[in-house]
Amino acid sequence: MKRTAAYAACLSALAFLSGHAVAQSSVTIYGTLDVGLDRIDKGEGNVQGTLFGVSGTTPVPNRIAAPATVTTRLTPSHTRQSNIGFRGVEDLGGGYRGLFVLEGGVTIDNGGQANDNRLFGRQAYVGLTTPVGEVKLGRQASPMLISYYLVTPEAIGSTDLLAAGLVVNTVQTWQDNQISYAIKQGPWTAIASYATNSGIGSGISAARSVATSSTPVASGTTGQIVGGLTAGAETASGRGKTAGAMVAYRSDELVALASYHRNNFDGVPIGVVSGTTLVPLFFGERFTSFMAAAKYTFPGVGTSIAVAGHNAQFSLRGNTDPEVRTWTATIKHPVGSFDLTAAFLHTYFTNYTKGKDRGLMLGVDYNFSKRTALYTRFGGIKDKRGNVVVSSATPLPLAGGPGAILIPLGTQEVPLFSGAGQNIDARTTMLSLGIRHSF
Image (cartoon, rainbow, N blue to C red; front, top):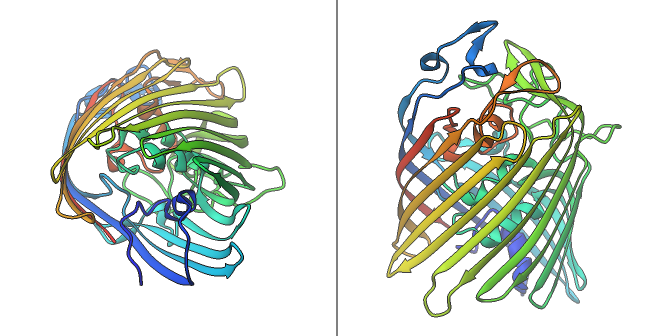
């Protein structure tokens, strides 16, 4: 059994990108365990005039519909997504290798399974490396997610503001039924992927495969989250078909890349659950996104700066096509055994409500070793609700920025702040202290 301190989430993809040669057959167990104590402060929201501010036709006061709260929790995956994985490689000779990966998310606070309660909810695939590239089949990281891992210092943890554009639609992260091809030539790497259904079910809502206090069990009548446990079943209509691509330039100092994602909704209803019934707010047709990002590491100093721009468009039935634009920047500076980080976020609807979310996250890591670190994070996000608008499907009004609206509509599986959510037109802050170990 071998050990690695690399980010586990895209281990096999990044191993290919680095051009690392495997001398013999091997099986590796790897993972990251990240858990912290946090305090979440949410200001009172303003949901007046929106769907979330009424009970039937009766207005509900803000102090009841979106009250201020203070919650102390023990939560997983603040700076890295906790996971455990198994990777096997067999050297076939002549530049050929067979490989597999089985990788699942872990919730360290309760010993459960992440990724909608799947055993191997992050990656489960087999593949073949050849002299002209690598082919993989199964549930995998998308090209868009691999792009983020190449530039982010936080590895898509719940405090990683750089990932805000990525989780606008969670089939931009892990995809069911994916076929991918990757090729590397010198500092250049290209990846292309296609999925027969990456995870779009017959209805989209915040319902999950396991019910919580705030969400019912996913079913044909309640819908389920994008990328949900049973959302990836193929249909004759082609619902959920997805294509993605990435091209990247990588040197010791500079990483520069661009990536693209598109998936078919096929007219599925997107909405909220009332009792056990899905109330449609939209009917989705397709989703497209693209991102450009770069990271520069100053030689001899170790300071790195990463910037990313992400644009996402929901094409819906009717004349409502919400567009989300996200700008993020992160700086990381080592001081002895410490790493100091600061992340900035600006994400907003360019149309629709024109609501926006702005955030700042500060972090300090003390690295006992390359594998074990003690960390703290402090920061927050302020939502500005923008305009109250009526959807194209029903006369139910909504307002808010992307983070406040898209989470209750089920497009985000791993929202920021470990599922704490955001109140509309309010500030949400986090203070956490935790420990992380990679193996």
